[in-house]
Length: 119
Image (tube, rainbow, N blue to C red; front, side, top):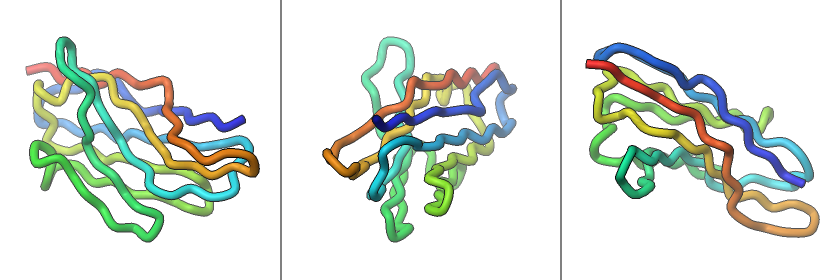
């Protein structure tokens, strides 16, 4: 059994910062790419940022220069530092990871954490 648990969401004013964290636990043999997605009200889920096992990163154009993704492979965690937040960043943020367990390889999702940016 593999589980992803996010933390760090909340309410912040425009221009502020938040840091999201996600920890993977359970029957984990290895973790490949880890990433953050978000779903805003009335919109489809979109990729925010992804980081490979080797540390390469990719960002949505809308967050480049403002968000930074990082990971700690020793702790099976991925974080998203969000600066200069805008009201349009308001969404539920989901952690995602490509995990190989002893029995299975697949994509796992966290339960989501709400980020609300007020104007």
